[in-house]
Image (spheres, rainbow, N blue to C red):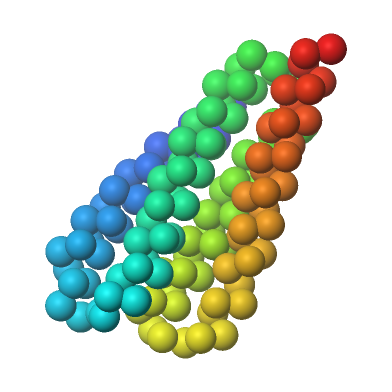
Length: 124
């Protein structure tokens, strides 16, 4: 539980810091398209930071749930792949980095599906 709370808090912090960096520090260096790509990474990182915190709370309610544990790791690795590749793409303009992004997106989807499975299991 503690690891997902920590990862959620760190990623929440980073998403705010990176969003501010994009709005103020990158505005003069990147075009609007690249800023939009960067901001998409920030949005998904912030959203999934909250998902990590939710997983931490749910693990407290359902200790020993491997479903929740897997969901947390999917969210975290999804942040790295999805948001990380968008940050790198926007800063370097290396288009091949965009090929990594969908893998992070799939991990996000799996994480949400695992949360749904946990909800279904705990309701029965």
